[in-house]
Length: 430
Image (cartoon, rainbow, N blue to C red):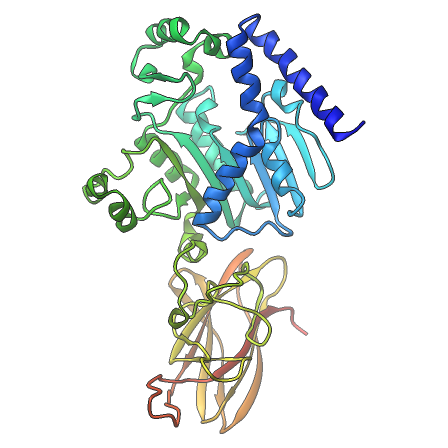
């Protein structure tokens, strides 16, 4: 069967399914079929919106798409990822998702996901949480499940409508959420009877207030990477929306949005994962302006372009030969850990005597010294130090400290230089 023949079968099947739901309501049938036909393009637009916000790379990543519907997102990302799973509770739409190489689909409940902990790099949950029938308790359980199966350095892409926004996209009507359920159903039945035929009652839509969402996030241990649930920080929101931006500084920045949408991460990981948020990249910030790559277990300045893995204190090589960067008196960097890799390996060179200390963060802000080295004049060093505690899978923060700094012989060069670093990496012990 050709691709076009398969599409014809799927289109016919969608229409048949719509007739089972809506009877002979041709307007509702057409709207429902069109909605699912456009699933792929709708997901592509959402994905592009998130890709403008954060560094997202699917190569070799494990992806979970909760509420996948007919599988539109899977058709976009599965060829790039290492492992894609689409999950949906509603079999009447899930049956139209087409499994293929690199992507699979299953029916399951979003508050009891059949996966082990810390499995997925990326989780997508587009307009799902408001469809959970149990209200706030199940919404708490849903976000807790996302936190459970999300890797410590993973990202979750989340959208749901704001209860306080007057127009409801599910019914295409103004204000049904502000009415008692019985009156809301009468109102909807009169103006959009197709919704009642599909959902029975508006009570099946559990829109979230800002307070509801904040409570669910606190319970789950997840946070938005931005200040506000619109993928903007307060200053950015005020710049783009001067009037509504005032609300952000009055503590009301979560309210004036049609939809909550943003990138979620584990609370303990949010600080360094903010480095994946896209921004203007400048050389003087040690940020490459192009060739952005994902976090890795090693930084090799002779081979790769880096920026978001580098913390404070690194100096760009400017006109010097490629292959290393200078440190200042203190620098930090982030290395991706998975499985083993209990050692830090540091390769570098110092033109003058120095004392280098290597530390690793046990948790944010708590440093453990794992080794030190007294460098001689014009010494090239290759150091390996064991991490003396169990580091969870995710990003490991490493700090290098030099006792002495110096300046180059170039009068215009005002940098305080520590040592040259060729590479720093997480490795297995020999």
